[in-house]
Image (cartoon, rainbow over all chains, first blue to last red):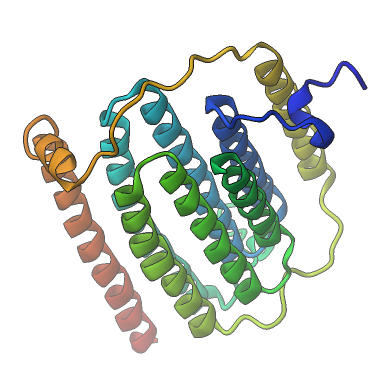
Length: 115
Length: 168
């Protein structure tokens, strides 16, 4: 297992948490959200996983901004948060409207546009 | 000490995110999402931006998760996902994506030689306000319009379908 970098070996965690570590956490969050979107069937949970991916990008932006010593990344995270809030409101309204019409939120039963 | 907290909150965040994906019940998934948001906010604090962590908790934990819970309650979806096997195409796509992502992570961890941090003081309200009202004035305006449009869109979206349902 020596080919694996030391980041993945829990026994030898590096002493200092640097930019790499924050980016790794961000990447893991993004991967988890991505697989949630791929594998879940409930539209609401898919939406939660989209939020996880947005969070991961915000975390990466904050980490890069901190390690560059600038504030611009943090300002953009403000915008990310705002846009995410607007997106959640509209998306959940769409889901509620869809549920009123079709009485389901399972993606496999929402096949109106298929074929 | 900061490293201990980093590992604590990083594991908390990732585990809670996994809980969102794994939980079959939508309410439990929303609760896991709340914990994950809290972990991300703590990581923001460790990155010297406590103000952003505050805003994050306010917007995400205070508004987004509550909105999710409201919708789960409103739709009253019984149970979680049905236990059906995934279609082969979905399984293949997930496998390819996992392989690509693991390759990317491994190469990143091996070759990523990133610089150390620049010492800065933690930005406060004053610095944010100075940026938001000078350099980023136009994006602030655009975001304000976006919020207005989203609000109008939600109202229209809810109303039109209601009248259509009543006309039936």
